[in-house]
Length: 535
Image 1 (cartoon, rainbow, N blue to C red):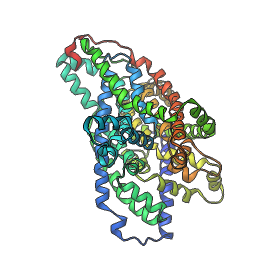
Image 2: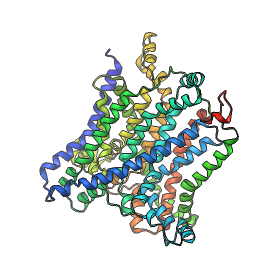
Image 3: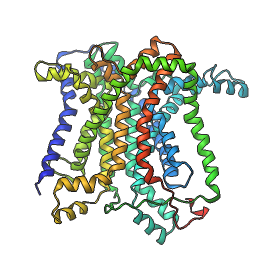
Image 4: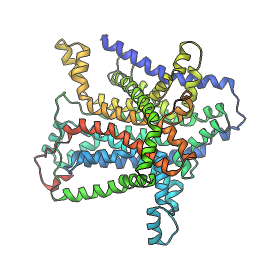
């Protein structure tokens, strides 16, 4: 049936394709004008690529496992202060990964608190295995990106249909209900795993600090040190092919996973009563949060050297903070709107949209950010209106929105898959217009996923560094650019103060998420209020 929604979906589909394909055209045009003197075995370092893929697969598995367990405990158990713990465990996502690496390398180093404690207990000089090599890299990357799985799994559990849970409890008991929830979480956790894998794969700051040579570093060096654009583009064919293969597998697997579809009514799922285990679990969560979140944040505060340095950092970087906030807001809104309509057409198979549309945004996450920035420069830096878009700085919004469009797209594809088509059909039969159906029936049910998608897009856009270095016009700087320059040319106290100011600023969107999530965290216990039902 052709109606207004087909036109809206076609417009959104064309916008997604144009936004994501434009830098690829710029890079393809650069292949004709450049040459590479590097031999093929240096351009395509298969052994290095395999080691990098293995490292990031370990990061994805560990991050998804840890985030999923935390999400289940905080959403489904009646632990005190569940919402506060959810916000606290999401805080590491607001700190750039290279700042995580810097903090943990100082904590575990010879003069760090944990390093001295380890030396006094074991007699060794330092935690070499934790400050260098694979283990340190994997640990820091997991601590940096596990909140992605935590937030996605939490949003999925909050939309878990109560009817299915009650049916499983009445027929086969708590174990069947737990197994049913595990099967339900397969789709969002697979999406989270793919996102964490690509985020870790494109991260070269942490491996560089921990002295681990990865494929992303090789591509970045070839582009910046050797000025070999053609070689960098050709080197990116390996991760590009891997990304397309992973997305094809993911789409095939998700097509076999049947997600529950609600009827539009809010049924907050009651939580499990832990009985006498409630406060031991609270103590365990408190210790875990203190070790993984409060300890590095406390060390960051300690590194500032006092409130005077923090005030100096805020006075120095307030314009950079406003620039980052404005850019992140515009990019997040643009990405969420495109993902909302594009994912709707992809799930409902309207117009030209379909499963193939999920492959297009993935290219933006697979390719290195430096190559994407170069592609946007080559495509938009021309005369006429395209030149106006480039010189006005609007290209930065396009580039950052395209970079993090896959995150919002995958989150909203999962959310749309949970909404039954019969809701729209019933509204059409009743004579409702498509826009009213979309606004008053569908969007309210997507609210948790929309908030998670907007928060993730805002945070990643705010922390974007590589593309901003390439695309920012003269005189325009962002807070990550200021922090990155301080890493090389400033004292540690100023670096810590700037990083702490970034965390303080990003507490505002966290506060909004907590405020809107309050109705979902009312402790309504299930009828089986016994400690044996804690499973």
